[in-house]
Image 1 (spheres, rainbow, N blue to C red):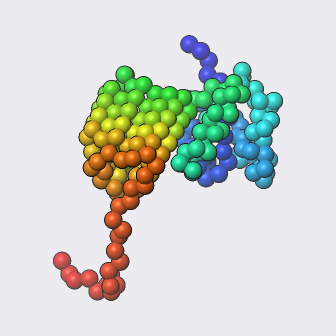
Image 2 (cartoon, rainbow, N blue to C red):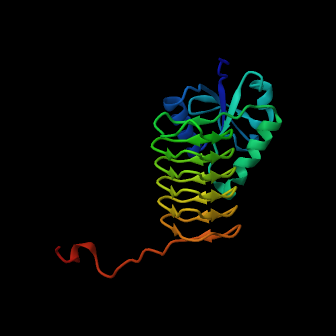
Image 3 (cartoon, rainbow, N blue to C red):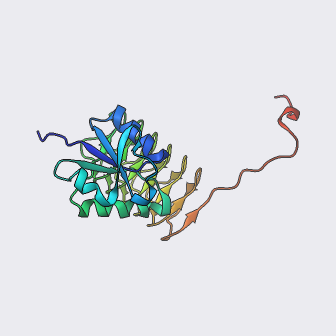
Length: 223
């Protein structure tokens, strides 16, 4: 069995801090340093770890001795994460993937690099997940579904069976994608949306807006 290499985490903000916690307490990986673009470094450390300019990361933490994970969220429809992902691969880094032991998956799962599947996620058989995709806690991916590269699926999103999720898509909290649908590339599916038909590339699908009723809560009728 190949010995695991220590991991350098790209990112120093709140999202990266959360990923650092998950990797430290829920994975076999040892995170030993962080890195961001040099212009964004404001201190010598992040999360108690040394922080190194990304422009010089291969000098301090060379790819033959260290792996990497790009801990960026869905800004710019996941393109920012993709850019750093591509650069890290060009530098020769292996981008690690972590599937939480608290997630439910099956042996035939196909998954790319720099992916993160968190606790309570349920992935059915015959599922394929592309590279650089993050699936947050409690989401559901139905049988025979395909999730593209550079996607972000938020908590409690429900993807039914035989669904195709295009690259660079975002699925919001508690949204539902019905059986057999195609979510086109670069889609943003809002929280709580129930998607009932295929989409076109680049679409934004929003749910009905919650209404604020007149009066205050202390005036509600007794049930």
